[in-house]
Length: 271
Image 1: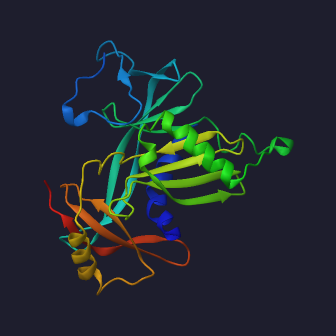
Image 2: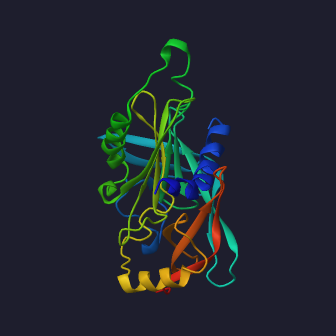
Image 3: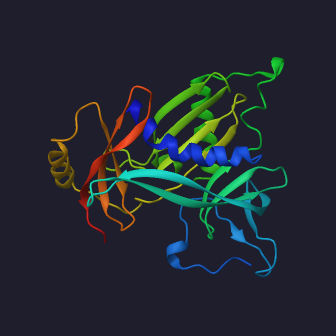
C-alpha cells in the first residue's frame, strides 16, 4: 500500500505547484452539477460582466472568495481499449479570499475540490520559528480539520503518510475504498509544522459514491490481469471518461516514477 502514493503524486503536485508558483448570482446548474458531502459554495456574481465571486459559511463565518486564475491537474490511466497509457487534464478555477488563501473548483462550476493556505510551506522554516509535530498529532489534526470541508471524510481511509523534513509538512492520502481496494477518489492532505491544515485536494470526490462492484467482477479482472502484472505492482479502482469502472495497475521504478501498466480491466460497464 505504501507504493500507492506515487500514482497520484504527479497529478496533485501539478496543481499544488501551479498554485504556489503564482503566489499561489449562484450559477444555474443541472442536477448532475450538484455536489454532495462537501462544504457548499454559491456564486454571488451580479452579472456576466462582474468579477466572479462565491460565498460559503464555515464555522459560522461567511467566506467570500474572488476568481483569480485557471490552472489544471493531470492524471494518468491505461486504456481498456487501445492498451496505451492516457493522460487526462482536469481544468481548475482558483479563487482567493481576503487573506490570499486559495479555493479550488472544477472549471465553470460550484464543485469545490481543494484549499491551499497562503505560504504554508515556508511560514515555519525561518530559524527559531521552525516547529515540529508528531505523526500522531498530524493525523489527528487532519481528521479533526478536514470534516469542516469534506462532510463525509469519515468514509475515507488513510493509505499513506509521509513527512518532509525540508518543509516540516506531513503529506497524507486518504482514499474511498471499494471492496477493500483503494480508488482514485483521493483526498491529499498537507498538515503544516504547527499542526494546522495547509492544503488539501479532492479532485474526484464522490466519484464512486453509489458504485457497487461484485467480488466476482473483481476476481475476473484480477485473473485477466495475472499475465501482465506481478505482486510488486499495486492496484486501484478508477474510471474512464465514458464512465467505465476499471481495475488499474501501476508499476513504480526505483526512482519513484510511476506509470500505468498499458491495460486496464473492466469491472463495470458504463451505466
